Image (cartoon, rainbow, N blue to C red; front, side, top):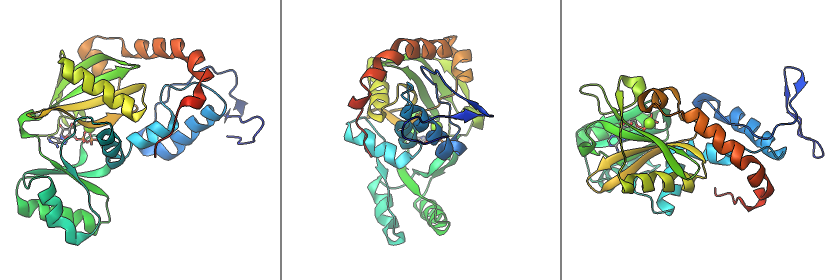
Length: 266
Ligand code: ADP
Ligand code: MG
């Protein structure tokens, strides 16, 4: 990437990339730093991207995402975060005691998400993560979700496809990577509204919003900025990739004109 002020460019295998109207970022979880830098370079070149680099960075940090969603009043599981070890009891109290869920801030595919069924288990897992200097958050366990979650695929201001993922037998995590399976579902109006508001709060025009059905309404677990296509297309028979391209084609020119109206939130 050439970061000169007059003519910023991107060179791929010796060839400058020119004449781009739009890009569709697909940034792997382990490539966030470099991937968002490349997206940012396209932004500097005034190329349209449905997901801006900053929104992608925000969505990769579970704590930061929760804080942004909370500010917008989106339904969330009761979530706690603390730094000092002596706060462990208080932290467990914050989410109403055990059972509770402990998460690494930058985990993905269900790795780094632990269900602690007792107070003692919660305490020792939190201590262990702390000992490793890992950043974690603690969450109320939504037992009534029954090991299932809802993946709502948002493009623009619409949920274009939705599926219910169910974890393997005895597994509380519904990730397909953990052996779960998926079926197409119809969302309630409240669920649709929550998914759209969550994507909007994060500033993402293409997002996979994961909801849990809790007894206090739909709660957002996470918002993915490079949501997988294969599982949702197979399950719902919706041409998701096509919908993304349609959206980008319709919006690329328009949004390039009022880019200055996009306000960053840290
Ligand atoms: P990852 O980014 O690794 O997918 P998630 O936060 O999405 O992490 O958690 C993985 C899975 O664990 C979710 O899909 C859901 O099925 C389950 N899960 C996560 N948090 C909770 C919770 N608070 N209550 C109940 N189940 C949860
Ligand atoms: Mg997940």
